[in-house]
Length: 330
Image (cartoon, rainbow, N blue to C red; front, side, top):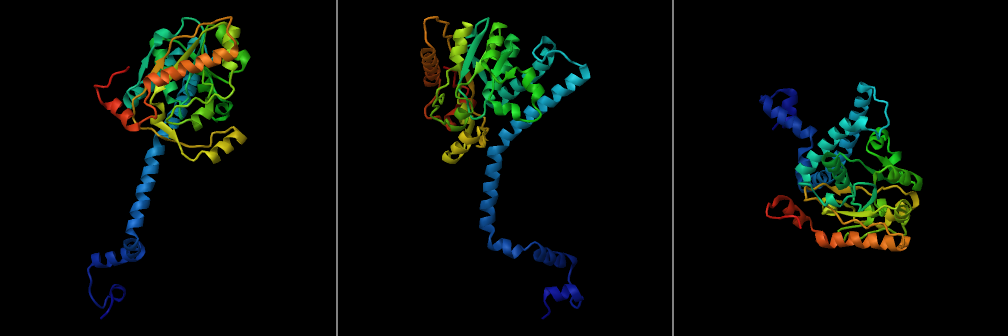
């Protein structure tokens, strides 16, 4: 008997074209090998799919941020805008950006903002808990501008300014390194200034227990006392259920402490319910010390967390709140 290989090659036994094609595919694609290891192939495929799903939303957010900067560059070139990035000339561009992110916030996280009435008409320092990805803070900035046409200047970690291609976006949205002098100038000009004392460390190494990781950070309290302005606490419900960091902490913690760069990759992006709560202001008190003001601010934020957050955070409960219309804000 002549095998399929000889029959296709020599033509001594007539075979249909489909039979020869099937044989060639079997030889070239190693079908027999795949059959033997089919279970392993399926497991690897499912694992890779899960990884892509958990990391694709954070990457999408990064893509939209860079796209926003590109649109600002186009706006600047087409309009030949040379004005100060914080001036009113940029308000139409800010409104467009804010509208985009507000739509994203409504669709993906059913975003709500509560307590805007607690913001002072004049200057003040807004202090907030830092999630793994501060997308909730971006939502807050967008809605504040749409509702009040008010720009809140943001103190960011130095690594943010090392990211390529974001210079114009940072300037137009009022993101600054946050030296003491810069903050005092912004407050004296009547701006709100926001800061997360936990910063990148809190973003990377806090978890669903919502532990504040401020260390010995006192600068915001000193600035508030020097500028004689109130401090306003802020917190977003379920921010850790939307985005989290990998569990392996020791290696990434050592890496961060030695480089001050956030190498830990965030994951998630689940459409959980986000509600941002702005607490009552802590008024300026000339008789309070810096340390006492820090503790008072920390207590105010922990109170917001205790009141509005399930501890430890639950992804399933956060998802239920997103889609169950019966779930109301507290």
